[in-house]
Figure 1 (tube, rainbow, N blue to C red):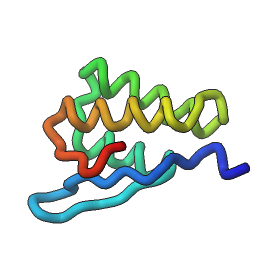
Figure 2: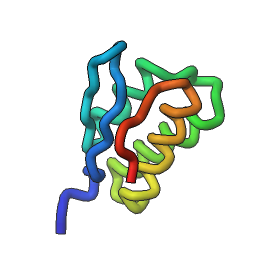
Figure 3: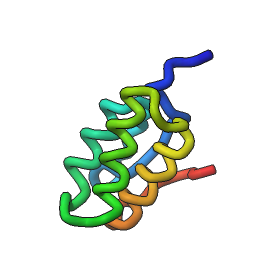
Figure 4: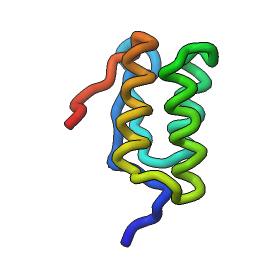
Length: 82
């Protein structure tokens, strides 16, 4: 069994034309802080999901989905979500 703090990789546009791939709670948290507004409900849901991921309290796929939803709500292009 893999590390419960990791997710399937997510590729998103960090800056125009430059993509970053994250696959763990640390990378997810850093991306959320950089691209999302803390008062947004999708940010709050994703931030909680990341915290729960670090404790092994959430399915990694659920945390990944919340992360993608928050980035997309903030207008960040997420590539190849499947």
